Length: 293
Image (cartoon, rainbow, N blue to C red; front, side, top):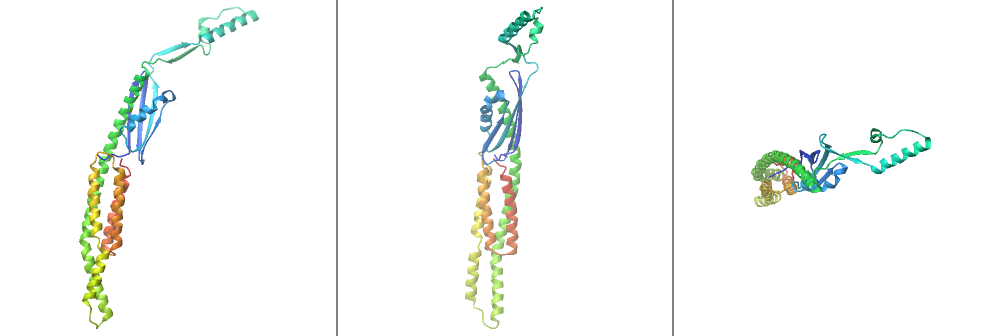
């Protein structure tokens, strides 16, 4: 299956009093590169998210953005700094004795002192369970990402097949032109020689030898056969289930090389136009496969 390297995936999940959201964005890249951005307190789970992505994405750069917000209804735990409270009490007693003050610290006043009371989220899950929930959220986001990449890949597949069909039509046209080029060369050569010799008799054997030499130099049969073989291999790769982007890129280079050779062998206006058309289609295919995994 042809898969694009461009896509987006998103998933949300409630985890231990938090609402987690993971956004994945993938673009073209020669290899598989994953960058994960997590809140500092969840940084230890970076590899968990990265592994979930790498299990299903073989090529492309994937940026993972993980945001975590506390659920307002989630319970909080209260921490009391007893040592600090004792220090405040001792300080108050010292001030009262030193300055001859009256009065006692009340509970309201103590609770209002900075640093005495602090609040923290009450964890509902242990470390192992929390990691499992984060992995589940990451897997859900990856599934959406892969689904989008597959849909884009199907579009690319249809476009590439249509261009391969166009190249095959141009190839067949070039094959029909090949013998005509030899015939036209023979006619032009005969005409030029006769104009030069005027009354002298034309050596048909020598003419035939010159035409044969030209036919051998200008023959494009081998190039057209290899071009057809490359196209068939290209179609076969498009049906593979494994990532084939790099192999397709190599085949396009080989096909382009054959087309260039065809253009350099025969200086014929009709064939030159066919070569230009084939190169244009190959360039469009090359651009498309840069986005294939």
